[in-house]
Amino acid sequence: MIKVVSFPSSFLSYRWMNLEKQHSKLLKLQAKADACTSRKEALKILKKSDKTINKLSRP
Image (cartoon, rainbow, N blue to C red):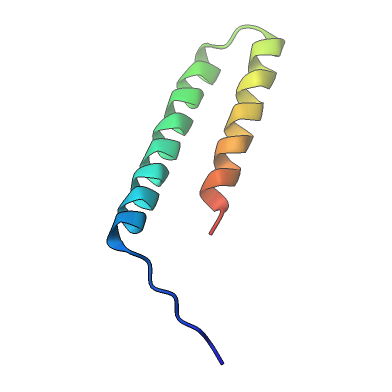
């Protein structure tokens, strides 16, 4: 038997805002990566972008 779970609209709007926030964070990280000059800074940016992408790919 499949159980259908309904979410309140406030949860869905929160989830949508979170996705928008993660996308904007990725855009900011991309701008920082373009201006990056050191390897250490680049690795830090890559780590942050991987974390953000993982958050976006969660169901």
